[in-house]
Length: 95
Image (tube, rainbow, N blue to C red; front, side, top):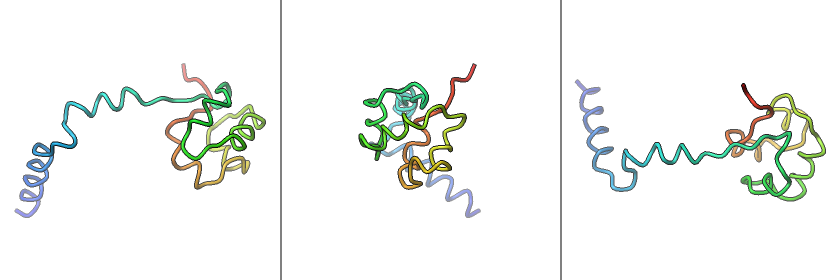
């Protein structure tokens, strides 16, 4: 019974919220930009949250990458900077 109340309240709040209309969610996902670590320009890398000119140069100097988590394993980017960018970068193109 409690689960049903929570579910109903959640649905009611989600449908009544003027801040996040349901139709807007897919459009936000479509604009998600992904950078390829092995080919992105220094300027493109600098646009990532927490990545400045010095870190962008370190990323470029560390190429090539087989996986994006190499940024942390090879100590090119600290964990605190990797968290916000990990969903915005990939190391290789997928076919």
